[in-house]
Amino acid sequence: MTENINWYPGHMKKTRELIQENLKLVDLVIELLDARIPESSRNPVIGELTASRTRLTVLNKSDLADPGANIEWEKKLAENGDFVISLNSNSGEGVKKLLAALERIQEEKNRDRERKKNLRMMIVGIPNVGKSSLINRLTGRKAAKTGDKPGVTRGKQWLTLQNGMMLLDTPGILWPKFEDPSVGLHLAFCGSIRDEIMDISDLGLELIKELLEKEPDKLRARYKVSEETEGALPVMEEIAANRGFIMSGKRIDYERTARTVLDEFRSAAIGRISLERP
Image 1 (spheres, rainbow, N blue to C red):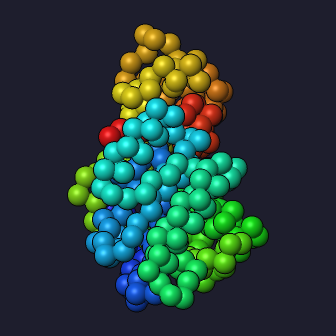
Image 2: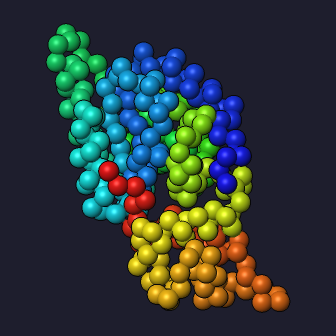
Image 3: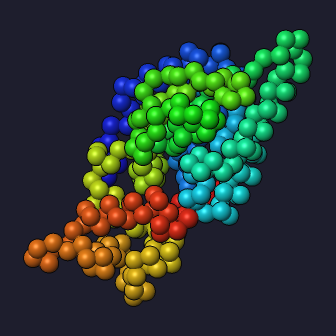
């Protein structure tokens, strides 16, 4: 179901060029990943473009992910030499730890300089990973637009943090082709691809299928699904019946059921779930 999606709209091509053009101006690249899907939300194009710069990886939305998985991912990603921090940009949890890490990096950069300079950073990531919310936390004001849909940030913005550091915001960027179909599904489950270009009923069914494999107890408990009910479609139909998502003629409202499961996965109402483990 993911092969027909237009993954690479024009503004993403422009964002790639923007990153390339401005890399020489920054000391550090901060890449935001979705803590629930660190592998799928790590853009290989960004990795190639920023390989020559000091990197700090942020596992954002860590409050929605499994706590044990967050710890595992921090250790795994740190093996590459990156600084790694888990945080929740909406609540601000973890932001002090991030600022402390930035201060240490700035001190290291200034160690051999006669004239001390404020750190200049670029923040990058896929759409809807929470860059704007984090920027607003770092600047202490509403400097960037936020939204629960991908594609809110459109152009580059240079912003000044409360500690004097400079930050370049960039729009979210996907990449031309996903070799693994599960990557596209994971991005869609987490809202990094617009729901409007997906078949929501199919997407919800795929999510139910994956949750039955990885977190069956949480799924069944949330929707009071019988242990005897097996298979994604029968489970989806039982969820619809239990929630009263039945239309005239006793027809099941698959779209409403799918939207409910997607929304409740994204908000962690089903539970704190990580779809990927190291």
